[in-house]
Image 1 (cartoon, rainbow, N blue to C red):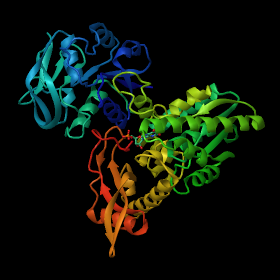
Image 2: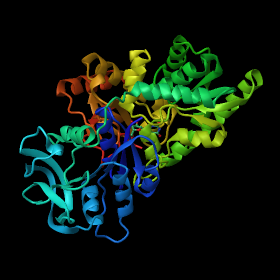
Image 3: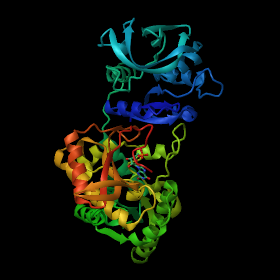
Image 4: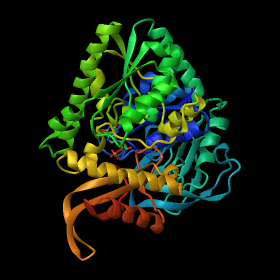
Length: 518
Ligand code: XMP
């Protein structure tokens, strides 16, 4: 299978580059710069993109690749494109000079193309590009030529005259670069010679074959939530191995939304899974969470209780059906990066609990979605014929409502939040905005405020509404919803949920805030 590798130098944009390449129907993977060497031996590599990054190539100890690597790629006929830090690094390693600029260049700039070249083929001579840099390439290596400039940056794009090696200081992967996608397309198709035949369904078929080969016999255990990731993963495993070999355990943690656990179990049965086990562990979770206010502590307690409950259920099922050999999981590409398994710059931000799970149970993992982004999982789910309600469902975090109640989690607060949550979801769906946003949910705040109802003074909970648009949850913007809709949601909440008298709207983006409050 042809693919283009994105070498990550610690940029949050590395994912965006890979996504854009995949949107252009070429399979793309991210690898940390420290593992770049090994990649050249892989099969089907058609191109290499060096990502941006927060460091300066002039700094000692900043991430680098060596000239051997570049030459070895070129000798195998693999073209290279450096973006931002990658653009500077490429020039630097090949013998050019990089310096700290007098001031940075951030935001939209006008790029002027000076030399006709394949990479800008079919595009206007002057175009808007997105810049975010301080360092500059001030002198090109021998045998390189400038292709384009901006006012602040004389060498905004270059190429090597004798080999397919390109650098662009701007970010073609960002939507603000007007012709970014076309520039990437030119790189992939004209320069790398990709055929662009990748579709997500091919990957799914390969994964199913792989699973069939690997998991000859033995049963599969899988915790299911009814969310699109776990449902799609279970369905693929079921199709590969037979639906009777997989046991789905739906755990009601008491931290789910109204009717969610029963709803999930029913839906899974309707899909054809014959072994769906619903476990009510809500009392245990609540008891364990008593008195805990620290977010990470909540996550730890929930994760370990979850594993405990799942293990107990697994033992019980093993008595009846024989030992489990495999653990199925709906882990997707960004989960793997965020939890630090892909190495490199992306820090371990939160302890995602499915990673903890596999380690505790000591079963062999089956993770058919490990290479996919959320929108690709949705596309795959649709092609498999899974129900629209599953496909369009917003992501819901493993620790559930516990991380949407700031402070201690109690039965009373959960009950209040559930009723508010139902109103938010109903109104978002009724208005058609549910499908246009990434997530929309209320958060119960740890204080009460004064209000007035009729002639009476009230002192009740405040809730915050968190409604964001996002492509993959790595970054997000608060949704600019019509005031009328927000007013409707707010007035329904304070009228129908007596314990609440104030509704706030969260106006922060990610970064600097996260999507969840805890
Ligand atoms: P943050 O809050 O980090 O969330 O901006 C990014 C996305 O991940 C979801 N999320 C989680 N999902 N277990 C999960 O399965 C978790 O512990 C967890 N924490 C956050 C969040 O809902 C958002 O979609």
